[in-house]
Amino acid sequence: MYALIRLEHDNTHGCCGHTLYGVCGNRRLLERVRAGQEHPEHWRVTHTSCELTRPGPQPLLEAG
Image (cartoon, rainbow, N blue to C red; front, side, top):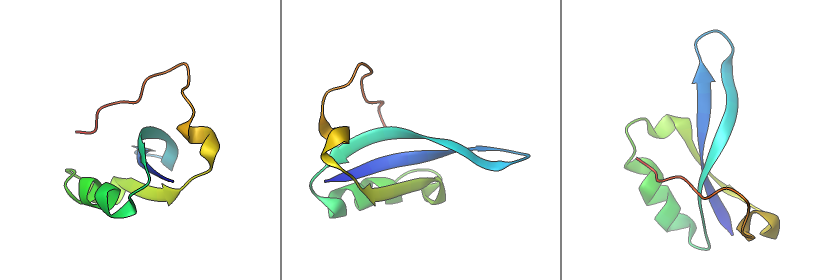
């Protein structure tokens, strides 16, 4: 499984966290979504464990 995450930046310290936007078994699909974002350098597709694929208390956010 792969996860699409957006890196959160601030002006003084650089990267200060991330937000999970989606989980998928198809890395190519997530790479296409990442490439279509306004600042693709702020997005990452990473290999993930099965724990991220379980339903959690917060819904996933819409990429955009």
